[in-house]
Length: 218
Image (tube, rainbow, N blue to C red; front, top):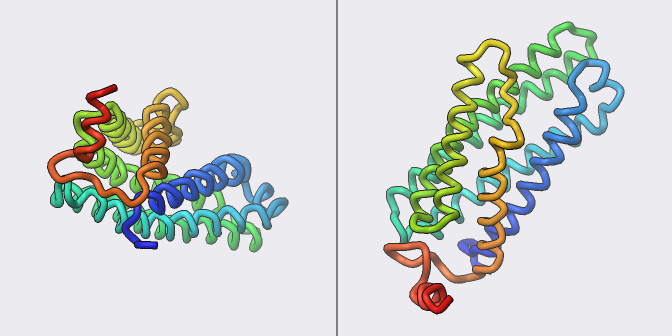
């Protein structure tokens, strides 16, 4: 199988969505204190490992998406890849604070809440970079509803990240309503990649000539 393959990108996206949901919903949203972490240490460690695998998958995905979108617009594809990879780097650095929180909890240190907060703020910074990636992806998918959704998701992520630092008391949580464009866009994109297989994106647009003809007939 070629590395630059839309179906492989789709499979990586599925893994990223599943691992991300597990890390966020099953681990970070539930284990918020030193007592929680110590009571479910195995689950907490699994959450860290899941997030690490998530980041490895993201790194591979950066390369594949850059190559898939290169015929559409190489410069914009490079921007999307650079900002997505920057988000990966920031998250990887922030992940060390999650493990530090575990060590602090085992030592009885009072610094666990601070370390968990540091991860949350680091994640907020990563989302700011990812927001630019979403906007660039929206441009690459221009003239489609999916492109508009990605652009809207980028705006939501960026506003949320800035609000995290500007608004006292805001914990960085993205509400379900605000997260909806991103969830729909990434799910839709995943399905599109899985169905696309080996077909590259066409130069000068997001649909091949065959797909354009199909779209017109529809």
